[in-house]
Amino acid sequence: NTLTVTGDWTEAAGGLTSAGLVQFTGAAAQAFNPMGSTFTNVTVNATGPVTLTGGPFTMSGTLTLTAGTLAAGANGVNVAGNFVRTGGAFTSTGILTFNGGGAQAFNPTGSTFQDITINKAAGTVTASGVLAIRNLTFTAGTLAMGANTLTVTGDWTQTGGGLTSAGLVQF
Image: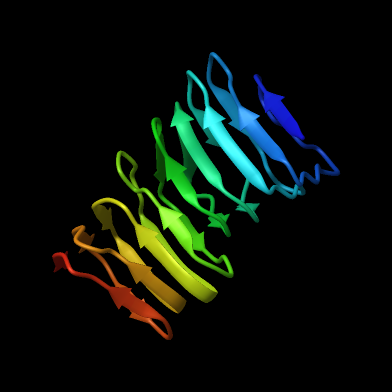
């Protein structure tokens, strides 16, 4: 099932449990407070930005960006599926965490990230583009950069997991 949101998403109490797709398609700016809700797959295909107003934002499936911007601010975003970008952008001053149990695709192109955490019980996060971030934390699991450049301007913390790269890694 698909739930299409063209306006703001506001929760005062309760929440939504969705095993399907929630898509944001507004023609103007949209506020999104995910507190209390459970998401599987989320798509941002909006004209204006979709701004997280409460967090963290957790999904058990795929985050897809096709148009518009998902502006996470300082809210944490947890993705257990793929991070797909064919258009639009993701901006964050908080932590983006990959925590899926299997392989995860990650297209960072055109987006702005502050901190990324890899915390996977199994599998690899495979980046399909250049990635520039402040802090990178490995708790468990692998980030595979391929031939893409990885730039870390802050801290690199590794208590488990690690990085594979055939490209440039710079600090």
